[in-house]
Image (cartoon, rainbow, N blue to C red; front, side, top):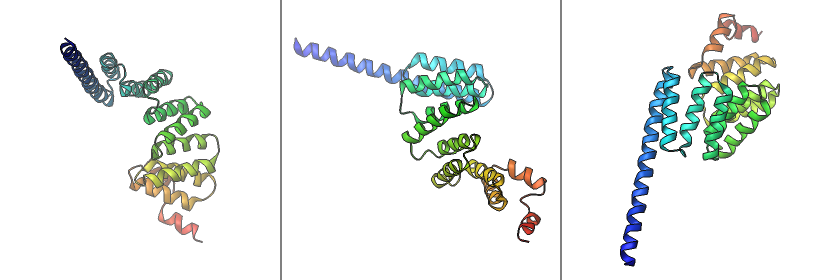
Length: 217
């Protein structure tokens, strides 16, 4: 009798495990479809997919995070913040959700809250170059240029192929009166694919060969 009960219990446990696995797989598939919709500007369809994913697996933190990203793309920052917080309630160690929450706070100019979330992202993942870059943006917005440069330097040390920290650091060098360092950063950012600042400055006569000639006089 005991053996039969044991077998029934094992079968029930296996069935539950299979159901959980299937639900998680389905949720992941729905999120991937949602990301494709969002990338193509079909935001409402994307949100529908994320909602279906959450119904399938309410503990799938990525579904809340990516739903938040879609609200962010729509400019609905408070709704994005709500979704990022839901993702973190499911998985407090989710560094990307901390980073995204920080960026949403930055857009709303809640600088202290943004710094708190970017710092949490870095604590969860010390090699998270984008979180360092984003925290640097907040310090830049607050006029704390030394701290911003420190964070941009950290981002570059971690991922030298990331263009944004060079571009952002160059902006500070230009503001504090070091155009040579600034132009070097803008040129490097452009080499890595971020050319908007460099192209604008070059069209204005900066960061070109004749500009460097003037600097050396």
